[in-house]
Length: 116
Image 1 (spheres, rainbow, N blue to C red):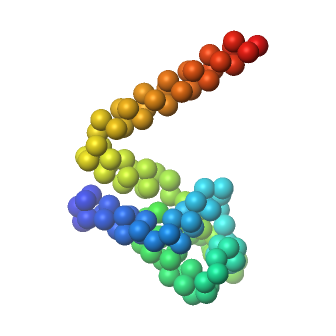
Image 2: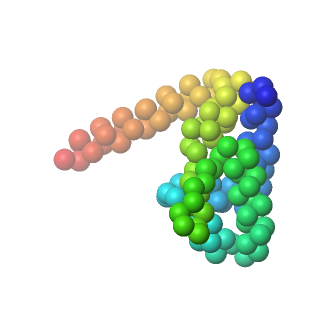
């Protein structure tokens, strides 16, 4: 499978707001499937299907702990796929964003020094 075809699965997974919310929830760390499901007003089997799509896209990993399945975010996969897309479509934006972040961080540090 080519990187482009592989990335297509990531973007298909990201197309659904429920799946994007699951990824956001997993930023805080590993969660059991039941807890993930309890955060949504849809059925547990529907959440299970969403988790399957995310797992198939390589965006989440799972491990068994007794009778529970714990899910965690695969941050590298998301960053690589989205980064590859951004660098192909708007490479100058990456430079601008990085420069702006450095400028904003430097400005905040400078303001803290002046306040002290």
